[in-house]
Length: 293
Image (cartoon, rainbow, N blue to C red; front, side):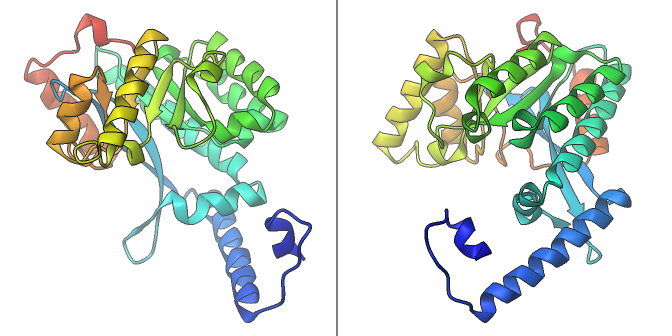
């Protein structure tokens, strides 16, 4: 019955041992997530954002990881979907935002120049009153440069209750933080629809970038997105850049910022700070036009 509900209802599912195995695994993982939150086992890494034409680091995206006993990190894709189903995502959102703001305050004490830090928010953050108010509380309880905080939301988070989501997004903007639309192009949005959103930053999904060097169709789509984003005064950050050809294509067509394995993989905060220190000591300071997106 539960499996049929997951498929949208109005259907039936026959019992199989695989369903029971899946159910047991979900319960086990849910319990493990609860314990990890209580024991503060999660950690945040950061993947730098760079200016595409110069490679200069502008800031980074905070990414949650779950260290395991074998020395590896469990990726968000392994546990975030289940956390969303169980409601544990609300506590995870709180944990991530609080730790990210703490780290941003540290940057402000170490560097004279502002550094942008983006944080992913779940759909619950915009569609659940309790979750949203708790995030506002975290933002308000600690003084920091709010303009340098970018909160990333997905298109699907906005579609559940568009009017309510837009009101909550506007409240965040009124506090001074910036908003970004993550995984742009993979959902249902058009730029006309997007024009109503208070978010002014687009994260261009890696699936569009992957084949821009070999696919005329993908190249045309990316060019069109960049041209229309420019007209509507959106800043575009391209995700998943892996080749110099991708970097050159994006930079040549007006995309200012990007992130990906071509530049840096996700790293610990200490390593990121060392990069920033070397960049500053090398005289590669942030230009006035880049201080805030």
